[in-house]
Image 1 (spheres, rainbow, N blue to C red):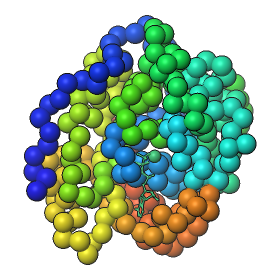
Image 2 (tube, rainbow, N blue to C red):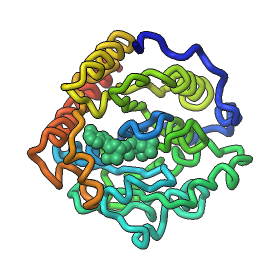
Image 3 (cartoon, rainbow, N blue to C red):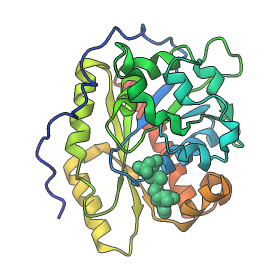
Image 4 (cartoon, rainbow, N blue to C red):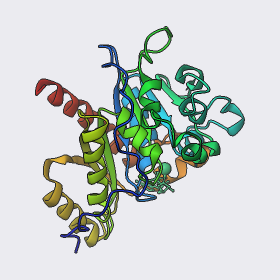
Length: 295
Ligand SMILES: Nc1ncnc2c1ncn2[C@@H]1O[C@H](COP(=O)(O)OP(=O)(O)OP(=O)(O)O)[C@@H](O)[C@H]1O
Ligand SMILES: [Mg+2]
């Protein structure tokens, strides 16, 4: 059973989390909350969570920007943004060729914007890996995002990370207030968590002292599967209150929606998947309030 996790492992081979140049000054009061959706395991529901949590937050009144930081571009495709619409991408932004505001485009969902990605992003490491500010590119790009463009008043930025602890994910962690970790309800759910937490610690130590874990969301839960129940119990026992109450069920409507370029809340508002993401959005806002109240 999943009652143990990997022994602590060495930091990722790439020297991405050593101190770099100074980050930009503290963000202004109107700055959005930046949440990086990260797990180096592939296919655990990061992109699905970015799209549908973003949509749910927008539906309950927040102004949301999803930043697609995965060269696969699944968040962009899943929101119906075709390649030819991705004139300015997060690659252009992180390589310093365009400001973030040029990449931001509206989606079909009111109050939900997207900064799309393209395949070029997979070459980011080669391109900027030797620059002193390489880990702070996203943080700098998001600084003052709400100033200067009247249409922008984002309250949340959700960053969809690739399945890797590479320079892209480090950029997301260095720019974020907190990290949301989707975890699939499967036997090896906790595998790799220690490495993820170690990277978070190193980013905290070297790049972003205020970074915290926002929470862990269990995804693709199948109540008919005894193992899934056991996995959720194990993860709750191991990670305690960091695990959200809301569990995202395995739901065919969730998996169908991206092929129509729609969030599940638009594709089928009444399905259990949509309801779960709305509950998660509410829980996240409550947790934000509690975090703020606690200082
Ligand atoms: N709750 C769910 N119910 C059914 N299918 C789901 C659910 N969540 C995600 N999926 C499906 O599982 C697959 C993987 O999900 P997703 O792309 O969100 O994972 P990911 O962590 O972003 O993957 P990657 O690591 O490749 O970026 C997708 O086909 C998605 O539609
Ligand atoms: Mg993804």
